[in-house]
Length: 323
Image (cartoon, rainbow, N blue to C red; front, side, top):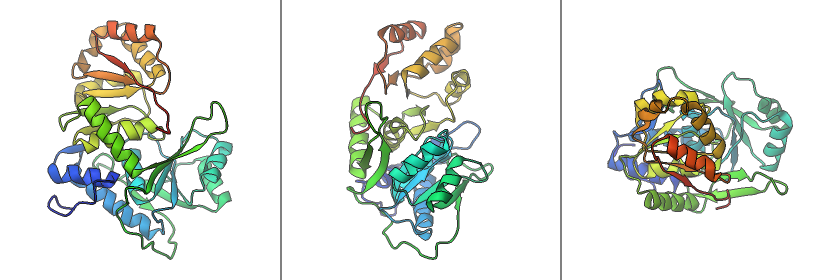
């Protein structure tokens, strides 16, 4: 879609990204180590083409599609694509068969997206449940986040419109289930747009910001905090694979992110990695703050982190998947 083309209503995830693409089509949207950047023009086009492809698989706006993919730029863009085409249900790829069986059945998904040629118990469970299995492959030397989808022909193409409506469900997740049976939480495009605007204002996000996404996209924070809001603001998102504190220095040096978000255990791992050599954290001089979510942050951990890393602010945030 060219910058001058009409954009979908910005009351949806795809509309927010299309609006950013219209303002700055050549700016980098998705970044990742060892891959060329994906521009906003390319991202907006990828979402539209991915939606068209899912429609050809028979996937409509009210279908639930589970994603069992490793962390990284392809998972990020696949999540945005499925949110734009249907209802996205991302799952932890480390689940065992029994866990996949519960989540896939409880969520009533109709299709599963998995990496091409990669074994996972999710495949066997999908076969038991009679689900459509779609395989995702990443072209060599392509821009960060671009992928191809392949699967059996279903003989029927969904005639749903490409653009989702504000009250359409974009994402559905289970709560952690720490106090009772996990509950399903549906989040609409309107929810995502409100969150993006709230974070843009609260964090003063602009097109100059670079977000370092260290959280998996099957976690609410990996999508609702670290993916949609920075893209709606016109900034860039660095999408990592599985979190590894020792791998951070070269990433910080290469991409110069301005903010990131972690959970307390990740903050502790970063502290352990760098405390023996604080000068290594000079690579991160671009960071303005680190947000910590998902669990209570021990005061002593926050103090030690800030003292070790030259007063870099640690901001504690806590909220539920439902909010």
